[in-house]
Image (cartoon, rainbow, N blue to C red; front, side, top):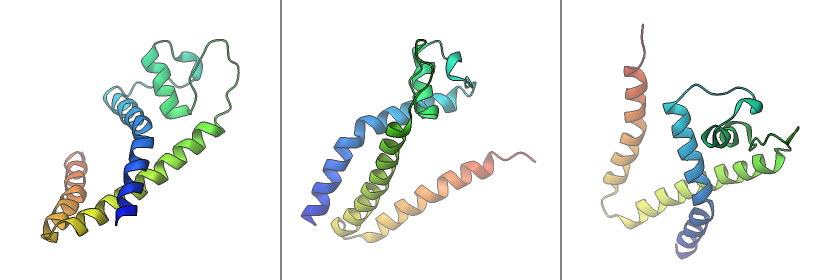
Length: 124
């Protein structure tokens, strides 16, 4: 159990800045869906940061092409680590609480609430 907690801590701390960045730029994209399609259209800093989120590149006027493989693999690693730390967090929650029904209840709400909002947002 100690090793799981330590791994959970280190993975979370290592990927936290990148996760915060992707959460912030993803939020901005959701709030402002007018995405600039090509890398050359990004003029403001926020548009350039959005390009990192969507195109794995930070657009600069003096650059013709981008190699995005490194950033993509880092995002793959971040995604895997996030999934792993979430699973570890759930395992730790079950092992730490005596009232496991609270964990099940929270997990159920975490699934049900987004489904309800998606359902309520449908227009027929």
